[in-house]
Length: 429
Length: 149
Image 1: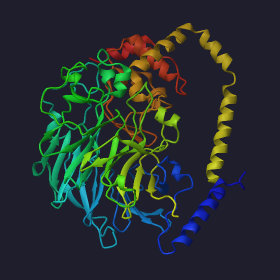
Image 2 (image 1 turned 180 degrees about the horizontal axis):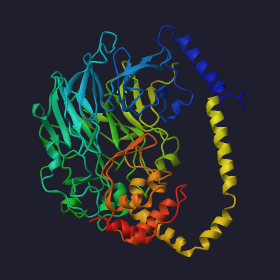
Image 3 (image 1 turned 180 degrees about the vertical axis):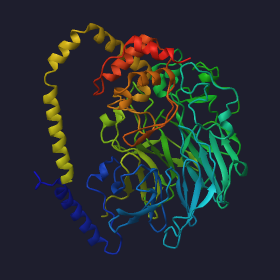
Image 4 (image 1 turned 90 degrees about the horizontal axis):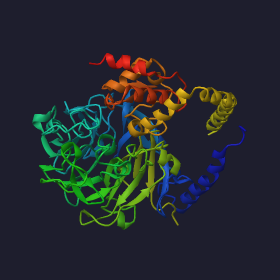
């Protein structure tokens, strides 16, 4: 039994493909997709490889212009909350070290700085000309004292082009009920959570020790945003909201199990300063295409909300947990992908007894800076099989997205810590 | 990869030996059949589980990573019945750690369930998802509820 190694069998075609690539393009770096495309299902012409197995809860990630990969871990592993991976010639990468003694989600690179977040704070690290963190043990503390509860703890981050830092502070509740997630419990009037959470806060990207008073509540009424990105065409912040849970559990007289599995939509919003997206008072019904009054605040599942709430630009199936948003600006992929959005759906839990869904990366076409046309599943089968998707026992769950300097799309998985790289074309002629 | 194969073989043996151990199921079944009260409690408990618990703890009792704890083979479920009953009646506000994984989401109190419903669902949970533990009696739930005021 021990003498039979399937890896050897796999290695033969991989080697052959690798050799062929080297032969045809002797000077270019060789990126060979894994023979099974890392287990992913992709559109024709795309290939994928497993860049590395980190074994950590890999949340968001960033790739520097030099190709160094930084991965934020949700939980510190061997004393490290950020992993450093260096690229190899074959397109894979090696974990060469790590730093940062805090868990968290946010990881973003811009203009020679690496930004990272814990669930309480945001830090930055100066990068040198090689894309290396010069002083890993001494980050600059940009923001501290961010509100954190026992749910929606992650603080996702992104920068604009004017040295502003945007931080999500998730609401530490499902729907601001007097008793969280409790059957029949009413919503608290003028939800007090919104003063310090349930929105996006704007801080300066280059000022130290900022707290809430130094920041601005940029947008409110967003229950929890994990995926967000700055759209360069619109010069505008786009976010994906995690919609509320448990309509049927908490309001069984108003919602069936089926309705609860399909409501509300996971929504894409384009933000302007001061907007209110409606949480906890409203939710978006994708069948009716309407903003509805939440049952905690007098809604009955049939009554649209009154009030000036921001409408979503696009709606996706309920409970699929959009954990990353990335506007693709590279040239490696075909033209239709340029300036469109990739969304990593971490996968659902809040659909039982219906089947679970998600665990894939979606592509949303854009035209002139706005969603245009139907979204499509781009990279599927992170879960390992349709049965694993249905049960929710996924092998891998996509959580972070990053674009490499060559236009490759990197995807992190916070279940096993696999780092994927999707390339095009899969084979050079 | 060869490590994986060894692991698979080991797992296969485990499964086989488990099956072998579970062979005498007719006996176990006979035992349950001989205890109609337990059978009825398990049947009612399954209904409560589906109506109240399944969203967060999932159909297989495995919970949701980092959010909702599993009900499979943990001391919380298999251990002290009073503690388990207290969690159902009073909820659980603080995060817990099981096998090195943190579960943080607040568990809401389910005090609106009757003593019978709590006894049934806990008996069901303690005897499903690979669990095997004694039934929870209505009197035991009543005693815990009396401590909550």
